[in-house]
Length: 538
Ligand SMILES: [Zn+2]
Image: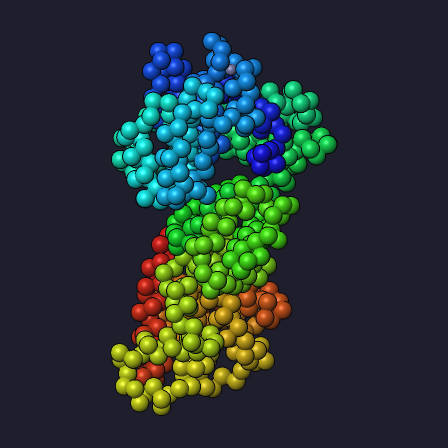
């Protein structure tokens, strides 16, 4: 069985074989036991609950209960019980709807269901992740559920009941599985630890329970992993292992990027932060999994099977890869790569990844870039944006008469002509495009703002920046923004730099330069609302 290698020894060995063995899930146990005793089992059940809470285990127990040859059911000794345990029973049909979701699969099920059971009283169908079925397949299934043969028992299982058609819900009896409480998990894991004589510290058990997050399956799998380490298990050992098993959350995060769900993405990051996860490592892990998607998409998935990825995780990625274009993956990886570079000099460890998630999820980011493929470079793209902003305000010929103002992002626009530039200021001007490019992935609005500032002075420890408006000053002085700019300027000048922002007078200028400024200001005003909402409220 494929499951053996996936789940590990303990999962199979300690899988509950009777309702009594099932830890927690009191209401499920009670409902099934009393229906069984009264001979009033439904012909179709829907098991709803998070992964790893015992839905399939319970389905198999139920299959044994209806087919066991002994009175004391399930006996787990008779031929039928044993054949269900070892997966050889011909009257138990398990379908994984995640990989058999089409009409053909259900049609063949409908054909076969008419036939009587081979050796048992009932034919039992377990359809896992049933919400993944296509509409046509659901319709076919519905017909079967409407006129079920008396020898059939259906057990549907789902982790996402919201995706189930109401017509199906009205035809089945729903039972809800809950995540295990920490006490229940600790009890179960401790039993295995004792039986297997695993050398583990009390603290490490607590931390194991925490990592399992209410899933028996995850808890037992983790225990299986550490038991094979052949050393005393401390809390630290568990922490290290968890680094590798955070796949589920990474997977969810990638899904958020796909759905462009900024809030959900940032929530996952904040959960990681609370767990004390290293954000640089997290970023790498995220990039690694996106790289896997690229490989899978381009026919190299075979390189990724164990030991790189468990079969289960690999399958999840294969499904996910269908939803991303190569272009989107490349763009996301590019943004994450930049965020990773930035994470080397940020004073807020979570910031680069947070901003990367915001950028990836922003409606204009990926699509815009994909739609504007014809543009050759960032500069051209920026030029186009500025030009578009100007078009409504300025006559076409004026654009051509002032091309240098648009093309060269530079902090010198308002620079007083009398001030002779120091070597440091010259260096900063020279690198200003780099400054803008570096900031862009973090914060579009700060980047836009930095196009209209001037550097008024640069000392050993300080760069003084002059801005035309007081709200520019407030944005620049927001701690996150100032930290970001300071770390970049420090990097360029090779010493620790503080940034001071002063308010300058608006210099006189020709009409269309003023128009550019107004165009930029619209963007800044929009951005300012965002920044003030998130950064400077306190
Ligand atoms: Zn039996």
